[in-house]
Image (tube, rainbow, N blue to C red):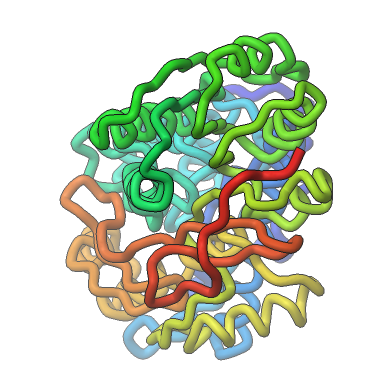
Length: 399
């Protein structure tokens, strides 16, 4: 397989230290295509932070226990520049040229779905850090495992919240990034809204890379919605929230996913973040005791803050979560053999700082309920589920 020189060099710059030890018996080599540059670079950087915090803890403890051995973890990165075709090429390079033992997925459902075909071709288990769309996991593959629950675990509790707290709400407007995960998520919101008798009066898609959403938002405003839902990524949703305010768009509920769970989104939009709802697979408020290298959610958060100077969000946490799941599976198997590790992954029952993780036969996580979040007074609060809620749900975002 041939790669262009410039992208390859960009990837090599990111290769982990100690790359000459790829074949050493005392190392476990894990490949990770990452979007370190391009539109998804904020998310790629976050995943890398999670991976490396897990690597730090594992190696400080002597490595992964495999029978009588302790294997130090070596991560091998390549930058796929936020371009899915490049992610596919680099995943194959990691397997065939770098001889990695296992793979961590690229960011997002689209790139994960594409690279999962490569992992399946070579029989290499790949742990997905950030894929939640059922379209990723409906291919019948046996080497793909994702730590996120499916998108309906976001849409269902938020739709139920709207129906319960705002019984007079009737009209729903949806604006979705035309990309696998955001569009799949939008489709789940449409289904969840209609299931509860709400009318979807607007459903439009915007192209990847869109920098001006004023036209679509103007059309959305004309439908006079009670509940506004926009899906996309951080940069998309910063622009959307600011332009919605400029156009004086309001609704009783304003739901944006994924963006508001990130502190940089809150900082970027300032007071416009107030009362915006979102959802996430992890938040520092959750309190799990775990059998992994961190020992608990609280300890993971503490260690992350020590290393990076801020609280982790769900992307950083999922970067570490794929590491602990793989580690627990290898230690259970007592081997790095793909068949044996795959069998342990399929058994599930992993008690992690991220939550209890088991997988459906398709490979998607099906063992925990993600929290619904709302920005209140500049902070992320949990409003659902009740057992971990930190505040009550509020309506009417500010403009």
